[in-house]
Image 1 (cartoon, rainbow, N blue to C red):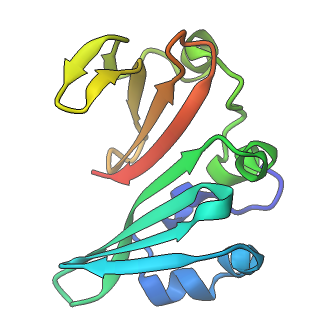
Image 2 (cartoon, helix red, strand yellow):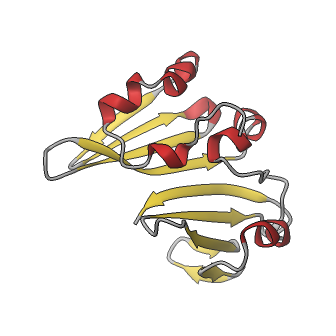
Image 3 (cartoon, rainbow, N blue to C red):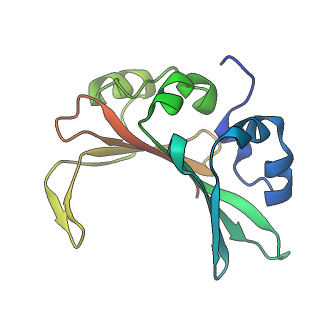
Length: 152
């Protein structure tokens, strides 16, 4: 990891602490959109395809619960520092599994849902058991399209 900053370390962080952190301030050059709906705050750096969901806790503070990363130049070039893992979006399902082992949950291409056809995916639970890492692959499983980091 190059900068000592990992999104995994940010899970459960309070909203104000999140926006005051140097790593997020560095994203200030990118366009930011936010919207509050009920007990959630949605924050998006849309031009770098990085999105965050903050949820309201019992103390009426928002904490970071979910991070979405999608393939784009910024995410690809900062992947290792963002996740603290040496996995790129060019890594296929076989590569991810060789690095992280067998996933705890998995889905295969073609499962139909109300949203249509679902691409293949794998879900890992981090050592703490309090967070998960979800990889959504391309339809041929030869690359990663989206990564979701979420509090459990």
